[in-house]
Image (cartoon, rainbow, N blue to C red; front, side, top):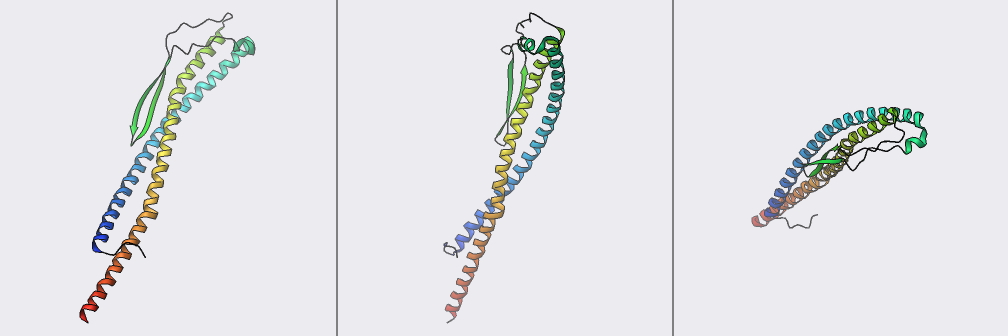
Length: 196
C-alpha cells in the first residue's frame, strides 16, 4: 500500500508525472540513437585514420631499420630529430548533446633543422617519416578521445533510459493503479453508506 492519500488530484498529479517520465524516456531514447550514430561516424573516421597511421608506421619502421643498418643503434640515437617547438597542435572543438568533441591536426612549423654530423639519405628519410607519423597521430588521438567520451555518455544515457523504462515507469503505473483501485473502493463504500 502506498502512503499517498487516494484522491483524484493525487492521481492526476501522478498521471502528469508519468507523462513527464514517458517524455523523458522518449528524449533519452532519441539521444541514444543520436549518440550511436555519431559513434559510428567517428569510428569510421578513426578506422581510416588508424589505417593511414599504421601504413606510415610501417614505412617509418622500415626506414628506421635502414638507418640502424647504416649508422648503428648508437648513431641513430644521436641523430638530430625534427624540432618539435616549430610545430603546433591545432584543435577545433564542437559539441554533440553536451559531449565535447575535438578535431586535431598537427601543423609543422618552419624551424631550422639541425643537420647530423654524419648525415645520410637513410637517416634523413627516417627523420622525415617519423615527423609525418606525428602529423598522423594528432587526428587519431582526437578521434580516440571522442570515441571514449561518446561511449561514456551513451552508457550514462542507456542507464538512465533503462531506469525509467524498467523501474520508475512500472512503479509509477503500479502506484497509479493502486490509488485508482483504492479510490474506487472508497467510492463504492461511500455509495453503500449513502444507500443505507
